[in-house]
Length: 275
Image 1 (cartoon, rainbow, N blue to C red):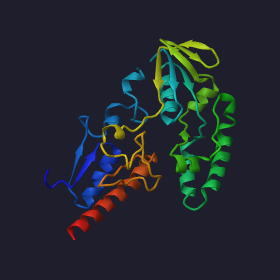
Image 2 (spheres, one colour):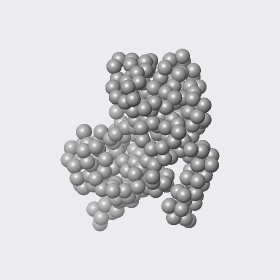
Image 3 (tube, rainbow, N blue to C red):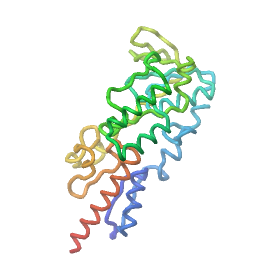
């Protein structure tokens, strides 16, 4: 342990990526992880389609049950699709505006963004999405004012890649409900005063960082929500040798940028100390 230069907290995608980058520079490190394996969310708590977030047994985990999914990001939409595939009577709450795209459109957008302004790319993507999906507002799906590429760049919010959920919503197989007013046991009352009984509720509302809870003296880098105070792309470096990877809400691509910057900075610091 006396030769360890870097302590990495967490063996998820960001922790493993920074370990790989440090290894390339022959910088000694140790990883601490509270679970019994690396990438525990991917290995142990994944739904079949994405290998992420939801425990697999729960989907069968719902045959013949009335299930409400709260949240309409990629996880919420895919979970809803899988629940229908496993015989559940599925409803979903879509609270915020979302962009619905196909995988091919997202790939096209990322390719075009290398050569064209993002606002132009967004215009093309929205036009194509309208041709493919039509007007989704009648089904309770509103589109954000900001285009999908700019929205991702400025806020970290990703477009929803449709796996067939939109088609099920259009057919009425997945029912879109309004906002929740209150939950009383198995009864959910919506703001429109409608009450429905559900056997299960799945909250696919995202997650938040808890680093600010267990990290002492991290106030110079993280805010009260456990997210970086500095804006992307300068969010990754704090003071006194403290770094954060993957908290910029830019997905795996953002993690890749973070860990390269962090590893290079650590190498530079070590070089200065050695000199």
